[in-house]
Image 1 (cartoon, rainbow, N blue to C red):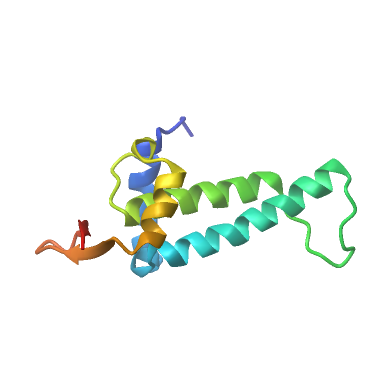
Image 2: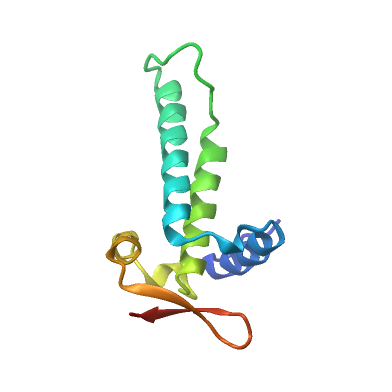
Length: 117
């Protein structure tokens, strides 16, 4: 598989999320799911660093958790209608998500558009 740009990954993930029914998720829902993945990444890092963890806790793979977090970043970016993830900072994403200063408006082609309230 050739290396993909962020824009290509966003386009790919937009298609996949629609096929799997994730295209109805809100930015808030997606951010909470991503935070869960960050916790799993933390457990994987702790395990790799040799930091004691609960013997009963699931072992997570670094690569898988990083991939999951990237997928959620792409998904949030698509929800917020940012055509290129590099055009918005994570701080700005979080601010927009929790500010309540946006709404999703459907146009005639069923494409979501981020609109100021």
